[in-house]
Image 1 (cartoon, rainbow, N blue to C red):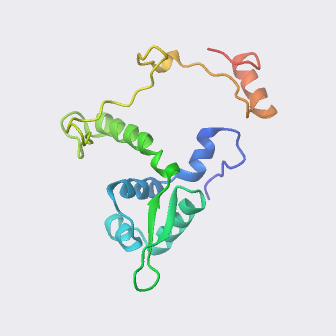
Image 2 (image 1 turned 60 degrees about the vertical axis):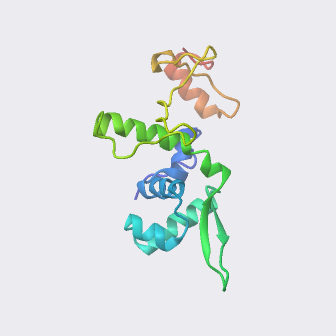
Image 3 (image 1 turned 180 degrees about the vertical axis):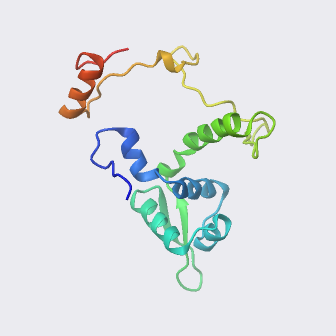
Length: 167
């Protein structure tokens, strides 16, 4: 049994409660490719019906997918990305780019993602500072946010030496 993170005061942990297994991310990837029907998800991924049903229900419950009736002659449901689901495009792009670089290697990318307007490859996803320049991870600092619990503040006070955080 996997550990649950639904009580943890951390956006990464809470996000993993929604997205934290490989089937979930692959379902979202397929939805970006245009897959919408249960049978199509099943056939392209080779996922069992019971696991697929559980994952789709979970994604609908967490408003990543919306289940819509697309039937003409009776109910026939499709799964479409909600705005919350579409907002994962950056996450999937960053993950794909990481895999292209570190798993496959330059020149061996299995899929190129391009800007439909220009045909050019998407630039590498980067975190930019206010000046528009890329920030390296060494420049990241952390501060307690407005949703931090006492437990979170205490944990980071131990790490950082104060409740305000450290650069």
